[in-house]
Image 1 (cartoon, helix red, strand yellow):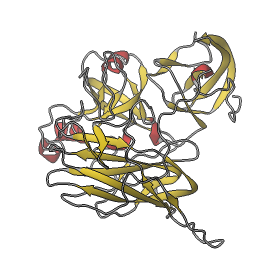
Image 2 (cartoon, helix red, strand yellow; image 1 turned 90 degrees about the vertical axis):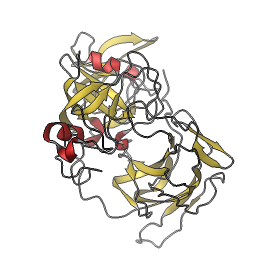
Image 3 (cartoon, helix red, strand yellow; image 1 turned 120 degrees about the vertical axis):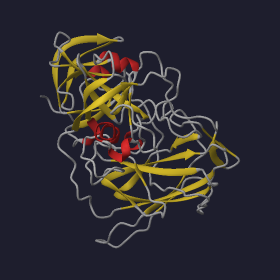
Length: 422
């Protein structure tokens, strides 16, 4: 039986801080060993904050166009730009190790030590993982170092550093993170994942590199959305969408940023939307610009919007849902709903989800690659064999309205622990 994949390194904290032009903020050197500090408090008092130094020296497969040398993180190729973003060159990104904490938190601060010359930018985003295994969206901290409040309480925190540097002169030397428990978010998580009808375009760009470092293959399966808030680390499906076209639905991970905008999380309510807060939830800025002349008909970068696209589809996803030309699809942003069940990772590509626990049942969705799924319950169904593994257990996935054989649930047990029978 396949063991669960380790998609990320382990880290505890996270926070987001934008380093402005020429600003250098002092922090301990990145090469120093990670440390975690906390202070015991009297019974009944609020837990003390947890503070640690993030390690920047490890650059691996979920990092994009960065290198660590001479005690600093920097851009590797000054001319590199992500495939779909269509924005500035000199892009680089490092996803730091997630860190598990010994207490629940929902607020994070960051102190970034960096040399940022005029014309270059650095952003630090943070997110948290709840006890049920689900991740919050990424959030960017303000330039003044104010705390980022996550939408729910979490037990692990992760940070991501993004650089834009065409001259190759940024030097990020350290990142110090502090997490604590503040007031709970006022907006409860929706019971059902949000869905919208949006215009889809074909990404293509085979051989290009996405914003998360994936090299685009022929007949690839992923999507691009116009915000870094829902960008999955390379190889993961932590933020995935279900795309329903004329022929069928497919579930695919978010691996690139675009089309048109890079700060348009239109699937979020206007109150928490990063930009274009005067637009209704579910309407991409590009659609409003194209159809109604919003923002003078321009996107967030000042380009004339030539189509109303709110999502880009990789070639395999584009063809699989039945599109022959750019067109309208229904998209469900699966991470936006409440967790219903227990979270597990999957393995494999083009994994079919069936209406019933048998391969003879109609296909209701498909997992293009490894995905984090919520399992509500499990049943004994058709006994099948895949890669030498035989099992009759099937899991019901409420986000997709169907069953997946437990063979593709990436845990050692054939009958999932802690999951009831349907």
